[in-house]
Length: 366
Picture (cartoon, rainbow, N blue to C red):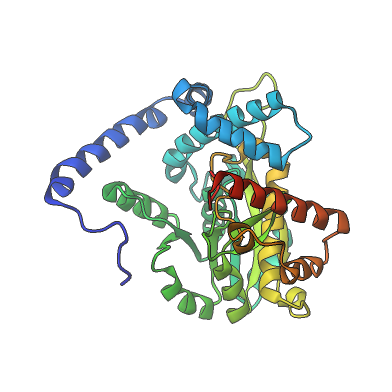
């Protein structure tokens, strides 16, 4: 069994602090189970904007607005700020929905809340004799994707980070497993992967996090972003299919009540036939799934968590104040969708980041 990185609990944490915190959490979530869902979601939306606009949150909001300046340079400052506020609205509504999802999404009632969209187009990948990696980002409701797949009869496994609050973590695992969604601790998941891949099963990742200084640097909104190598390495080792999609919140029609309604949208799907002819298959896989996540975010930017430090870890050449490497330039040029104009923008952005890091004597971005 993998070592739990959260460490052992002290007696005070085990018998006093953790139970009290868990009781407070469950009490805070009670309104979501007591009051009508439309009422709860309207309240959550209001709380989200209030929280986002609070004075103590100003620095975090300003950083999010700066990220949007990179991602959507065509927007003005007011548009970016409003988009961040919508992101906070979505965040609090999402937290509310995660609490009630195990109760609402059942075998009989899930179609009241989820449309499968173009999921049927992905069925050949899901039903062939290969394992499948399902990738999404912190956009829309990533948990509903796994839930729905499990309710459709697929053996679903989702990689996640265990909650520091152990009792809450136990509750999350138990409620999700009742619907057929098996949560895999990210710190021990790689040990379980060979067996799951051998069984040709589906494993889900939220794949847009910063992967640290050892991650593979690929384009993300025109700027290099550290991305997980493990996804591409797993796909290469086990000849897995890759599907990228999201559960996108559907807008509430004017004059109707706010409710929980999502559509599953597959934005890309590919397999070994796509990467085996590429000069660097690992780089191709990583760049393609990042590009697909960017596409889904562009489809609904208000449902993305712009609070995340998505460009935190910088490439080695930027940290060492060296010119853009020819080897990286060649890899980018080899991507089938890369244009000369886009490549020039990526290199220019990297040069700007390198100069900024040297000027401010930093190695990571906020």
